Picture 1 (cartoon, each protein chain N blue to C red):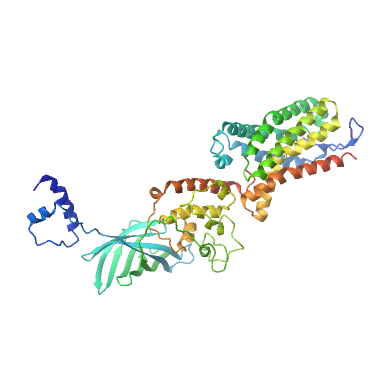
Picture 2: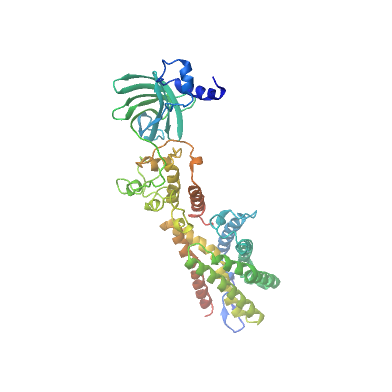
Length: 223
Length: 293
């Protein structure tokens, strides 16, 4: 699908905003590649096994049913939220198939608010690396649900500009699944720090920077 | 002869083979009477000698180990016949042969069975006064990487001691670099990565003595986890087939290879620690420097 450069759209409040739809195909290919990597991570957990991959070092928690439920719920649903990157930010797609935008949008919000967000909070509570990582992941879950909820509220009130702002923030946090891992890869390749030290850093770096970029993007496109 | 004395009498005859009997000139009847209170039979003891097994004739183009730690065990040496076994580089092989005695020195030539690719012939002197064994070994297969090795071993009794630990000197080499898991005689390019070397973290825990918690080891590099785990095996006298770990533990003074299978000897504490360490090693192996988690 070709993303045509289309710059100016009138928001409800009359601000001219540039749509994210001006992303070139290469960026989307990039995104598709990382989505594929995330799918491969998810695939490790099929068939369901409590002593595989990441769970190999979470054995002290898998005895708790709420941890098991939260972990597998998160692993199998959070990946779905990445699909929004393909469907929600394309202006031509929104124009031609607004129904797709709405249905995918509801699906995205439902997954985040009902499953992936709460389960993320639960497993974040038991995160590796101590209190700092636990705080990082729990805060991430809260903000993810908060922004998504506010985005739904905005569009139900008809405030498109606010809806876009909150969804940009929400999606910035969705992207943290990818950016956290990318940072980890880069930091280890360059500095070779101890494993939990890296983890404690990327637990924050993986999403806080995304929000900073999201804010910059929002402000930039409001002028 | 009473039937229930028969087993004792038979047992004693087993030990009669190589040892001289103190009451040989007594009549069989007297022997049977003394069988009621069996005298402590002279048990054959196995004497072990440990040291470096150095390459003397070798093909430097091949990927060889210039030195390995070896234990030579002499199970019996009587009537000109010598029997024993050697443990080195993950191989435990029996040998037997003949010997002569000159004063306080025993000169022996002993062959390994010959059905293993690495079998050969030992020629050595056992010096009773200095309690040492010196000699050479020649491979049967002249096409091997190393065809002749020499050794100068000291007598040592092996005893499992869970308190044995490595020291700083075992972790760093003479030049002050982290010990790499491989004897790299070619120029090494820069520092080895943390999966193929150890740091002083490897000294932090004795996994044969302390039950490890995940907080203890979750922030350690793979190389250190591997050394902490393999130190358990080393304490039991495990002879490493894995060249990397062999290189680490051959350098340690107290290390003495005596067996190629020590899994039955592991304590419950050690087994728990091994499980935990393996999990984190595996995690590091698969995820430390990759995108996935």
